Amino acid sequence: MEDEEEEAPLAVEVDEPIELSSQNQLSSSPPKDGDVSVGVTVITGYLGAGKSTLVNHILNSQHGKRIAVILNEFGEEIGVERAMINEGDGGALVEEWVELANGCVCCTVKHSLVQALEQLVQMKERLDHILLETTGLANPAPLASVLWLDDQLESAVKLDSIITVVDAKNLRFQLNEHRSSSSFAEAYLQIAFADVIILNKVDLVSPEGSGGVLEELEEEIHSINALANIIRTVHCQVDLSKILDCQAYDATHITRLEALLEESHTLSTQNLHDSGVRTLCISELRQVDLDKVRLWLEEILWDKKYGMDVYRCKGVLSVQNSNQLHTLQAVKEIYEIVPARDWKKEEKPMNKIVFIGHNLNENILLDALRACAAC
Image (cartoon, rainbow, N blue to C red; front, side, top):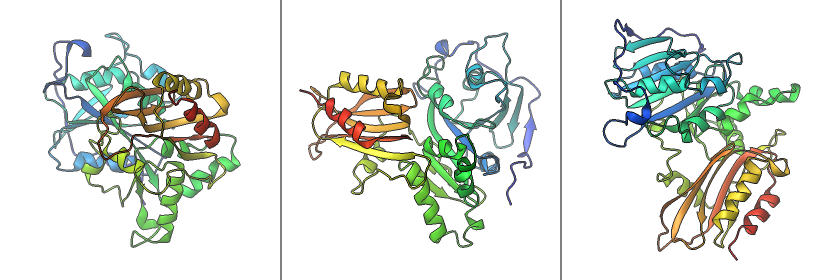
């Protein structure tokens, strides 16, 4: 069986400090090669699911990319909020740097993640991608919020996607944990926030890597998060093109979202389990008033109106007095609505929003969306 404690990848010790640019702040040190930001992929998952296996696979692969991996060690005693703070020159910096034989970089961070990211993007040799393994952090939402729209990081880095690694053999047990516990199962949150889900160790469930058991597991995963792309793996051997540069938070990259919204079957799922976590899709043909939509979203995202807890939200909007398709995306309390492109002639402008969350009420959400229709 896979073990979370594995041999470290072949590495070369860095004898001298990694050379940074002369500027200390990201605001005065724009990304090289124009406006291109460095993508950050957050890797989460249960202990033993295979996160370290995935990281080692990426670090040992001859992919020709210069990838940095941040292994964070901030836990409950430090707190996510403190880890997000840039503590300045006097703050705790990256604890250890190791440069790998294939050109990748690995580091351990115990305090300021923002500061570690600043150091990485200011390295002399430009990075192609950054991976962040969330050891000891059950809920990736705070990280996602900071990496997605945080002013400290400006445009030097961008959140590319959240990847959740799940153990095919033990997933059902992990999802059922909350039934005998007063706490909410971490597995639900990790699946709900994911853009890509790696269903690992499929060989321990079905020797051929297929069959009814795996299909049932995928159905259960999609009942929680119908938007996530599921990839079956053994030892996390996955094509890197499927997990890097996903652009899941890029408003102009909406191909996958469009495809999902055009699917004939509904994205809404019933509560196949008693957690109350589900995917729900609502639609409205009439154009909407953008100010009303913003007020409505702030009520449910910020004020938790009607007792609903929205984890993720994606959609397209047909906005009053605009011929542009607007995209909507939210992670917990943070949301963004931006024009993406003109509506195509063959398209029928409409509003379609997918919610992933806890205690979602379809009738209330649909009535509220209809109330946002322009008069």
